[in-house]
Image (tube, rainbow, N blue to C red; front, side):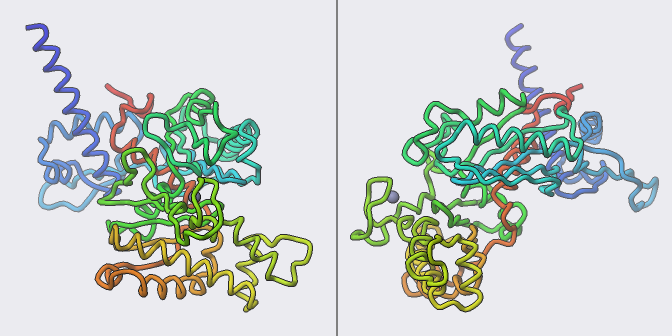
Length: 407
Ligand SMILES: [Zn+2]
């Protein structure tokens, strides 16, 4: 009998946790809603709703925000979600930079620190820069440590679900022996979530950008490495081992140059930042003695520089080959391009659309929009913060008190 009672207690706790997540999500989505509406829309009893809402109010996530319109009888008290009850850190670890953002529970950036750093070769220095940037953001916004909900980290590497803090030894050999997740969890004593950068660009677009209407989308990051992230039915699709979307190593020309992965003619060898900067040094005559940056190429292409435009054209061509394959495979409603070079806008999109139209099944293409990201340079870092928010709205038990605040 004791065993049965214990089982009943576990079931009741599980049920309460599920109902709590259900209500919290609804209040977050609606921003303002009455208890009666919550009961009507979830089918939960008014007393269950009241008990859980009381719990949410004590946690600081929900508060009364005034009176709504009466439908005969007493005016209902409205409940609102407290966007600023907690703060989230989102980190983008690039190949050669670190970006740290501090957001609220609505994905709004309140502070950000960007630092150039040779991340690939210097894990110690990169981790120290992440910590000092986080501390700086918390200090500038006067966020106490107990109000830090968690940390999300975007990394330029596939992330295996069994060891999310370990980066690919192929892409970042100097990082073997380092665990980003364990390091930051130890330093801040909060939950830390790690995912691939393109996946988090996709998550950000799905929550706050081009996919807000719930469309299936693919995000492509064009930077030092090239990667794709998928949001399918609201969830990031990662694949069995976390390597879904590694389009940077799709062979677009089998007779092309050797890639770090050991294959030939991978997309990255043609349009990765290093490759296009090398092209720019060879072709853009005004840049003698200096390798142009991606920002230089964007600026020159927009100003009409013929050499810079041939480079953008090639990026559109090779990317188009990969996107055509991807559109045939996944048939997303929207493909969003992110990364510094995509700031050239239509100069790239026109060529890309042309190549995709010529190479993908027309039935796949007609349903797919190809756009550049509107979320700007912080998209991936905000996506990292969104990963924490998504987990928190799904299961408060993952997080320490006071967010949990179980009565
Ligand atoms: Zn490769």
